[in-house]
Structures are given as structure tokens and as C-alpha cells.
Amino acid sequence: MKILTILLSVIPLIGYSQAQNATMLRSQNLKKYEVKSGEIKYQILGDAEGEEMMTFDNFGWTSLRQQEMTFELYGISSTQKVYEVTDGDYIYRVNTDDSTYMLRKDLKWSQQASYKSPSQVSEAILFSMGGSQQADSTLNGKTCQVWTFEGKAIKEMWIWKGLVVKRRAKLGDRNILTIATEVKLDISPNPSLFSIPDYFRPKE
Image (tube, rainbow, N blue to C red):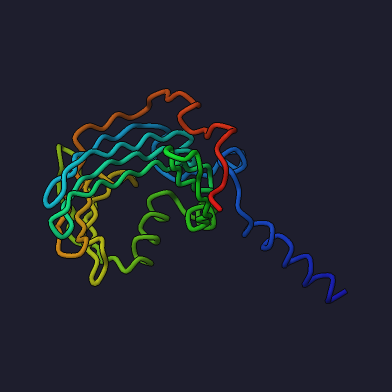
């Protein structure tokens, strides 16, 4: 009987630690962000230039992040492109040039979302990253939490409703500032934004 009790207590934990997609997480009424949907456009400044956009739905469990950034490295201009689709715990880094993707899993949000509010989860994750919370500050009329990081590539993040609206990073000797220029909430994004064509294959 004692062994059975131990097994019954372990099984739910095993199931809970498995990766889940957005549909599974929303069926449990879990939330990653405080708002259901939105789109944020960013400008990249400093020792690089470019643009970034993040569109999300299902309280953040589905999202698309696109970035194109140009910078100089040893006198040579280099361009970095990011196309990333998130489906719950699954994150697909897509390469549109060769129709491949790399898949990784990130369970940090879902493991805590069942017993913490979205703002509490965000704070816990930022703290686990080595963040130190500073006094709140305002950006475009939005009161943001300001977090700083020592010894990390990301030096500072401004968070509003769980969303990053400003990020300061250091890539080698280059200082890069990514700042939100437009924030739209409660939109109706096309579901196709968060899908990957069937002919795309995992990168070998």
C-alpha cells in the first residue's frame, strides 16, 4: 500500500513535467501573459540597426517573433535574422532559406503557471535569470518593471504586463537597444502566423 501511494503521488508530477502545446495549456486555463493577444513592433538601435516584431495569442502560449538586425563585426557588415514560432512549451527556430527548423522545449512558464499569476511567473523567471528589480519607470505612458542583470549578455529589461517593451544588451563590444515603438493589444491574429508549413523539416 505504501509503494502504491508513492507511485500515485509521482505519476502526476511526471505528467506535469512533460511538454505541452498551447491547446493543452489553455484547456487548463493557464496564462503566460496578462493579456490575451497583441502585437509589438520594436526598433533596434545603438551599435546595430534593425527591426523586431512579436505577435501573440492565447495569453502568450502561441507567438511569432521576427527580427532582422545588421551590425558590423571586425569591419564586415553582418545580418542576423530570427524567425521563431512558439507553441506552448515548444519553440521552433525556423530557417526560411533552407526550409528547416530547430526545436527546443522551455517548460519554465508552464511549470509555474498552475500556481502563480502571470506577473508572479514573470518575476520568478527574471529572478532565476539573475535579475535584480529596480525602481519602476515609465515608457510611452506605461509603468514598467525595470530589471538589470550582471555578467549577462542582456543588461536590462523593461517589463509591462509581462511583456518586454525595452531591452538593452551587449554583444561583444557592441551595445544594442531594442525598444517598442508600437503596442497593440486584444487583436485577432491570423492563426496561420503560428504554423510551420508541412514541408519544413527538422534540421539534422
